[in-house]
Image (cartoon, rainbow, N blue to C red; front, side, top):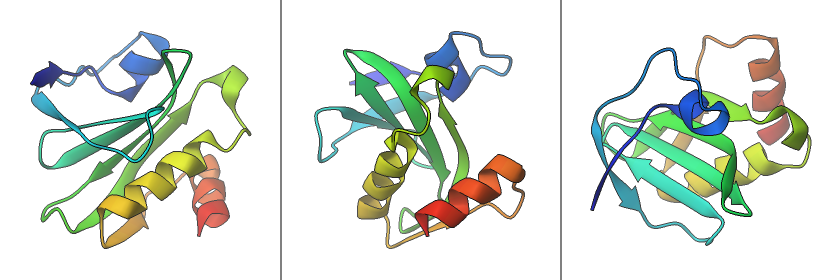
Length: 116
């Protein structure tokens, strides 16, 4: 089955300035509360709470073995509950190596420091 995606911000806050229009497939995860979609180069993990996506992490890969965290987003009212960390740990199960982007803002550096 293929899915059409609109990017993390589109899924989580229903506003996407840069819609992603590629075809994706659903990827199996270790939890019923985590969904994953991929087009082969991008993997997007979503944490679901009562059927609603509350947190997401996107990773980019060229070889399916090593990945780089491209972005992370958690709804404002759901932050500091460990959801992004849960998604990061799920992503680490899929890849041999998961690194953070070198282009990080203040919050990105804080997240990278907290999960490593």
